[in-house]
Amino acid sequence: MDDIRDYTIAQNWSDYSADEHAIWRLLFERQQHLLTGRACREYLDGLEGLRVAADGIPDFRRLSDILDRATGWRIVAVPGLVPDDVFFAFLAQRRFPATCFIRRRDQLDYLQEPDVFHDIYGHVPMLVNPVFADYMQAYGEGGLKALRLGHLEMLARLYWYTVEFGLIATAEGLRIFGSGILSSAGESVYCLDDPSPHRLRFDLRRVMRTQYRIDRYQETYFVIDDFAELFAATRPDFAPIYRELAVLPDVAARLPGETRSRPARKKEGPRRSAARV
Ligand SMILES: [Fe+2]
Image (cartoon, rainbow, N blue to C red):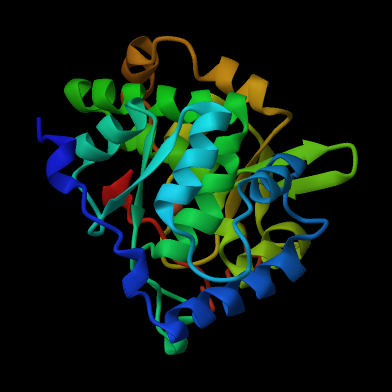
Protein backbone atom coordinates (compact mmCIF):
# COMPACT_ATOMS: atom_id res chain seq x y z
CA MET A 1 0.00 0.00 0.00
CA ASP A 2 1.09 3.55 -0.61
CA ASP A 3 2.42 5.39 2.40
CA ILE A 4 0.07 8.18 3.46
CA ARG A 5 3.07 10.33 4.43
CA ASP A 6 4.03 10.49 0.75
CA TYR A 7 0.78 12.33 0.03
CA THR A 8 1.04 14.89 2.80
CA ILE A 9 2.08 18.38 1.79
CA ALA A 10 2.43 21.69 3.59
CA GLN A 11 -0.58 24.01 3.46
CA ASN A 12 1.66 27.10 3.37
CA TRP A 13 -1.13 29.15 4.86
CA SER A 14 0.82 32.40 4.71
CA ASP A 15 1.00 32.10 0.92
CA TYR A 16 -2.75 32.61 0.38
CA SER A 17 -3.47 35.94 -1.25
CA ALA A 18 -5.92 38.53 0.03
CA ASP A 19 -8.18 37.66 -2.90
CA GLU A 20 -8.16 33.96 -2.03
CA HIS A 21 -9.25 34.79 1.51
CA ALA A 22 -11.91 37.09 0.06
CA ILE A 23 -13.27 34.22 -2.06
CA TRP A 24 -13.54 32.08 1.09
CA ARG A 25 -15.47 34.88 2.79
CA LEU A 26 -17.86 35.16 -0.14
CA LEU A 27 -18.58 31.44 -0.10
CA PHE A 28 -18.77 31.33 3.68
CA GLU A 29 -21.23 34.17 4.03
CA ARG A 30 -23.45 32.82 1.29
CA GLN A 31 -23.65 29.39 2.93
CA GLN A 32 -24.10 30.76 6.44
CA HIS A 33 -27.16 32.58 5.24
CA LEU A 34 -28.55 29.54 3.42
CA LEU A 35 -27.83 26.89 6.03
CA THR A 36 -29.76 28.44 8.91
CA GLY A 37 -32.72 26.11 9.29
CA ARG A 38 -31.25 23.70 6.71
CA ALA A 39 -28.07 22.23 8.18
CA CYS A 40 -28.34 19.79 11.08
CA ARG A 41 -27.57 20.99 14.60
CA GLU A 42 -24.48 18.79 14.83
CA TYR A 43 -22.95 20.52 11.82
CA LEU A 44 -23.74 24.04 13.04
CA ASP A 45 -22.39 23.21 16.50
CA GLY A 46 -19.21 21.84 14.92
CA LEU A 47 -18.74 24.91 12.79
CA GLU A 48 -19.11 27.14 15.80
CA GLY A 49 -16.83 24.96 17.92
CA LEU A 50 -14.08 25.10 15.32
CA ARG A 51 -14.34 28.85 15.02
CA VAL A 52 -14.00 28.42 11.27
CA ALA A 53 -14.63 32.08 10.89
CA ALA A 54 -15.66 34.08 7.92
CA ASP A 55 -12.29 35.83 8.09
CA GLY A 56 -10.59 33.68 5.50
CA ILE A 57 -9.18 30.27 4.65
CA PRO A 58 -8.41 28.54 7.96
CA ASP A 59 -4.92 27.50 8.97
CA PHE A 60 -5.09 23.68 9.10
CA ARG A 61 -2.73 23.48 12.07
CA ARG A 62 -4.84 25.78 14.18
CA LEU A 63 -7.99 24.00 13.12
CA SER A 64 -6.44 20.58 13.79
CA ASP A 65 -5.50 21.55 17.33
CA ILE A 66 -9.12 22.39 18.11
CA LEU A 67 -10.46 19.31 16.31
CA ASP A 68 -7.88 17.05 17.96
CA ARG A 69 -9.01 18.15 21.40
CA ALA A 70 -12.64 17.41 20.47
CA THR A 71 -12.41 14.01 18.76
CA GLY A 72 -8.76 13.19 18.04
CA TRP A 73 -9.06 14.00 14.32
CA ARG A 74 -6.51 16.14 12.49
CA ILE A 75 -6.51 17.71 9.04
CA VAL A 76 -3.68 16.92 6.66
CA ALA A 77 -3.02 18.86 3.47
CA VAL A 78 -2.94 16.81 0.27
CA PRO A 79 -2.28 17.92 -3.31
CA GLY A 80 -5.72 16.84 -4.60
CA LEU A 81 -7.34 13.50 -5.15
CA VAL A 82 -5.36 10.68 -3.60
CA PRO A 83 -5.52 6.95 -4.37
CA ASP A 84 -8.33 5.03 -2.69
CA ASP A 85 -6.10 3.06 -0.37
CA VAL A 86 -4.38 6.24 0.79
CA PHE A 87 -7.70 8.01 1.33
CA PHE A 88 -9.03 5.14 3.45
CA ALA A 89 -5.77 4.86 5.38
CA PHE A 90 -5.99 8.54 6.29
CA LEU A 91 -9.54 8.13 7.59
CA ALA A 92 -8.69 4.95 9.48
CA GLN A 93 -6.02 6.97 11.32
CA ARG A 94 -8.41 9.84 12.04
CA ARG A 95 -6.70 12.09 9.55
CA PHE A 96 -8.87 14.06 7.14
CA PRO A 97 -7.12 14.76 3.82
CA ALA A 98 -7.98 18.28 2.67
CA THR A 99 -7.15 20.09 -0.52
CA CYS A 100 -5.37 23.44 -0.11
CA PHE A 101 -6.39 25.39 -3.18
CA ILE A 102 -9.51 27.53 -3.39
CA ARG A 103 -11.62 27.96 -6.50
CA ARG A 104 -11.38 31.07 -8.65
CA ARG A 105 -14.01 33.76 -8.72
CA ASP A 106 -15.45 32.39 -11.96
CA GLN A 107 -15.89 29.01 -10.24
CA LEU A 108 -17.90 30.13 -7.22
CA ASP A 109 -20.85 27.96 -8.13
CA TYR A 110 -19.22 24.91 -9.61
CA LEU A 111 -15.98 23.05 -9.49
CA GLN A 112 -15.38 19.46 -10.52
CA GLU A 113 -12.79 18.69 -7.87
CA PRO A 114 -13.07 19.37 -4.17
CA ASP A 115 -11.33 22.53 -3.03
CA VAL A 116 -10.49 23.82 0.43
CA PHE A 117 -13.97 25.27 0.89
CA HIS A 118 -15.66 21.96 0.21
CA ASP A 119 -13.20 19.97 2.32
CA ILE A 120 -13.03 22.29 5.31
CA TYR A 121 -16.38 24.05 5.42
CA GLY A 122 -18.26 21.00 4.15
CA HIS A 123 -16.58 18.12 5.96
CA VAL A 124 -14.62 19.17 8.98
CA PRO A 125 -17.43 20.53 11.24
CA MET A 126 -19.10 17.10 11.23
CA LEU A 127 -15.88 15.58 12.58
CA VAL A 128 -16.41 17.50 15.82
CA ASN A 129 -19.36 15.21 16.54
CA PRO A 130 -18.06 12.14 18.42
CA VAL A 131 -20.39 9.62 16.79
CA PHE A 132 -19.79 10.92 13.29
CA ALA A 133 -16.06 11.07 13.97
CA ASP A 134 -16.12 7.37 14.83
CA TYR A 135 -18.23 6.62 11.77
CA MET A 136 -15.65 8.23 9.50
CA GLN A 137 -12.83 6.25 11.04
CA ALA A 138 -14.85 3.03 10.67
CA TYR A 139 -15.52 3.98 7.07
CA GLY A 140 -11.79 4.22 6.42
CA GLU A 141 -11.23 0.80 7.95
CA GLY A 142 -14.16 -0.57 5.92
CA GLY A 143 -12.73 0.97 2.78
CA LEU A 144 -9.44 -0.84 3.14
CA LYS A 145 -11.35 -4.07 3.61
CA ALA A 146 -13.68 -3.41 0.65
CA LEU A 147 -10.63 -2.83 -1.53
CA ARG A 148 -9.24 -6.22 -0.55
CA LEU A 149 -12.60 -7.87 -1.22
CA GLY A 150 -13.15 -6.11 -4.54
CA HIS A 151 -16.40 -4.40 -3.53
CA LEU A 152 -15.35 -0.79 -3.42
CA GLU A 153 -18.27 0.42 -5.51
CA MET A 154 -20.83 -0.62 -2.92
CA LEU A 155 -18.92 1.07 -0.13
CA ALA A 156 -18.41 4.19 -2.24
CA ARG A 157 -22.19 4.49 -2.52
CA LEU A 158 -22.49 4.43 1.25
CA TYR A 159 -20.01 7.31 1.46
CA TRP A 160 -21.79 9.19 -1.29
CA TYR A 161 -25.27 8.89 0.17
CA THR A 162 -24.24 9.63 3.75
CA VAL A 163 -21.02 11.61 4.13
CA GLU A 164 -21.53 13.62 0.93
CA PHE A 165 -25.31 13.77 0.41
CA GLY A 166 -26.97 12.59 3.61
CA LEU A 167 -30.12 14.05 5.16
CA ILE A 168 -31.32 13.58 8.72
CA ALA A 169 -34.85 13.68 10.11
CA THR A 170 -35.26 15.95 13.12
CA ALA A 171 -38.20 17.21 15.16
CA GLU A 172 -37.94 20.45 13.20
CA GLY A 173 -37.98 18.68 9.83
CA LEU A 174 -35.38 17.38 7.42
CA ARG A 175 -31.87 18.74 7.82
CA ILE A 176 -28.63 18.37 5.86
CA PHE A 177 -25.50 16.63 7.08
CA GLY A 178 -23.88 15.69 3.75
CA SER A 179 -20.83 17.76 2.92
CA GLY A 180 -21.46 17.83 -0.82
CA ILE A 181 -24.72 19.63 -0.06
CA LEU A 182 -23.42 21.81 2.76
CA SER A 183 -20.81 23.38 0.48
CA SER A 184 -23.25 23.89 -2.43
CA ALA A 185 -25.55 26.90 -2.48
CA GLY A 186 -27.91 25.42 -5.06
CA GLU A 187 -28.19 21.92 -3.67
CA SER A 188 -28.68 23.21 -0.10
CA VAL A 189 -32.01 24.54 -1.28
CA TYR A 190 -32.86 21.89 -3.87
CA CYS A 191 -32.40 18.86 -1.60
CA LEU A 192 -35.01 20.06 0.89
CA ASP A 193 -37.35 22.23 -1.15
CA ASP A 194 -37.58 20.73 -4.61
CA PRO A 195 -40.39 18.21 -5.12
CA SER A 196 -38.54 16.08 -7.66
CA PRO A 197 -35.92 13.99 -5.78
CA HIS A 198 -36.69 10.85 -3.80
CA ARG A 199 -36.08 11.15 -0.08
CA LEU A 200 -35.90 7.58 1.14
CA ARG A 201 -35.40 6.23 4.61
CA PHE A 202 -31.84 4.99 5.01
CA ASP A 203 -31.47 1.33 4.19
CA LEU A 204 -27.94 -0.04 4.00
CA ARG A 205 -28.64 -2.56 1.26
CA ARG A 206 -30.63 -0.13 -0.84
CA VAL A 207 -27.89 2.48 -0.51
CA MET A 208 -25.23 0.02 -1.59
CA ARG A 209 -27.24 -0.90 -4.69
CA THR A 210 -28.18 2.62 -5.74
CA GLN A 211 -26.26 4.31 -8.52
CA TYR A 212 -25.45 8.00 -8.37
CA ARG A 213 -24.52 10.81 -10.70
CA ILE A 214 -21.71 13.19 -9.99
CA ASP A 215 -22.67 15.78 -12.59
CA ARG A 216 -26.12 16.84 -11.42
CA TYR A 217 -28.15 17.29 -8.28
CA GLN A 218 -29.07 14.01 -6.66
CA GLU A 219 -32.22 12.24 -7.73
CA THR A 220 -32.32 10.22 -4.53
CA TYR A 221 -31.39 11.21 -0.98
CA PHE A 222 -31.33 8.85 1.97
CA VAL A 223 -32.59 10.04 5.33
CA ILE A 224 -31.24 8.82 8.66
CA ASP A 225 -32.90 9.30 12.06
CA ASP A 226 -29.73 9.91 14.00
CA PHE A 227 -26.01 9.34 13.75
CA ALA A 228 -25.96 6.56 16.32
CA GLU A 229 -28.42 4.66 14.12
CA LEU A 230 -26.22 5.21 11.08
CA PHE A 231 -23.13 4.02 12.90
CA ALA A 232 -24.96 0.97 14.25
CA ALA A 233 -26.29 0.07 10.80
CA THR A 234 -22.82 0.16 9.34
CA ARG A 235 -21.05 -1.66 12.15
CA PRO A 236 -21.67 -5.27 11.01
CA ASP A 237 -19.17 -7.14 8.87
CA PHE A 238 -19.99 -6.11 5.31
CA ALA A 239 -18.40 -9.16 3.67
CA PRO A 240 -21.59 -11.29 3.73
CA ILE A 241 -23.64 -8.27 2.64
CA TYR A 242 -21.33 -7.68 -0.33
CA ARG A 243 -21.76 -11.32 -1.35
CA GLU A 244 -25.53 -11.09 -0.97
CA LEU A 245 -25.78 -7.91 -3.05
CA ALA A 246 -23.24 -8.85 -5.70
CA VAL A 247 -25.78 -11.09 -7.44
CA LEU A 248 -28.53 -8.43 -7.41
CA PRO A 249 -28.96 -5.70 -10.03
CA ASP A 250 -28.10 -2.09 -9.28
CA VAL A 251 -30.93 0.34 -8.59
CA ALA A 252 -31.05 3.47 -10.73
CA ALA A 253 -30.96 6.79 -8.88
CA ARG A 254 -34.37 7.40 -10.40
CA LEU A 255 -36.54 4.41 -11.08
CA PRO A 256 -37.56 3.62 -14.70
CA GLY A 257 -40.85 5.08 -15.82
CA GLU A 258 -40.70 8.05 -13.51
CA THR A 259 -41.21 11.24 -15.39
CA ARG A 260 -40.60 13.97 -12.87
CA SER A 261 -38.14 16.61 -13.89
CA ARG A 262 -34.46 15.87 -13.77
CA PRO A 263 -32.74 19.15 -13.14
CA ALA A 264 -29.31 19.34 -14.60
CA ARG A 265 -26.65 20.50 -12.25
CA LYS A 266 -26.70 24.24 -12.40
CA LYS A 267 -23.08 24.85 -11.75
CA GLU A 268 -23.20 24.32 -8.03
CA GLY A 269 -20.82 22.93 -5.49
CA PRO A 270 -17.76 20.78 -5.79
CA ARG A 271 -18.21 17.10 -6.37
CA ARG A 272 -16.17 14.38 -4.87
CA SER A 273 -15.18 12.20 -7.75
CA ALA A 274 -16.18 8.60 -7.49
CA ALA A 275 -12.51 7.73 -7.59
CA ARG A 276 -11.97 9.53 -4.33
CA VAL A 277 -14.34 7.42 -2.29
FE1 LIG B 1 -16.28 15.61 -0.08
